[in-house]
Length: 116
Image 1 (cartoon, rainbow, N blue to C red):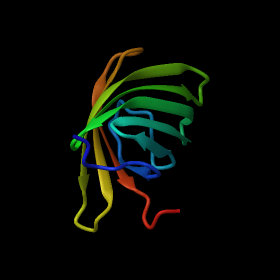
Image 2: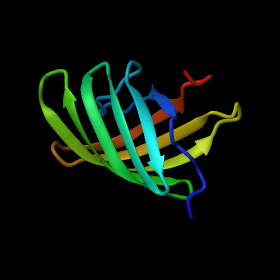
Image 3: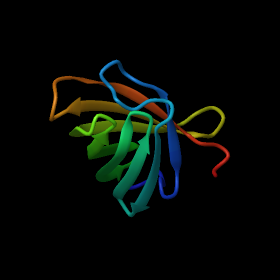
């Protein structure tokens, strides 16, 4: 059952892991069709990225691939908890694992509010 609607939501990076590449300049914009989720992202150290996955209740899982400012292409997989902040914004807490380099960690994304 899909209970959270990410369609059209844009988020920014509010906290990033030392092994993460996204930063406060990175923005992700989601599209959702039923349980299927797609996001495109970029900014900061990421030239362009895409994630593809699904959402079940408040759990978002996806694979990601990104072109970094160095020109390198890297990717991995993530499982995220999606919730609302006390202010009503969506928050995505991402637990990622690289598949093209060593490491894993946690990033936090908060909804850009009010929406653009």
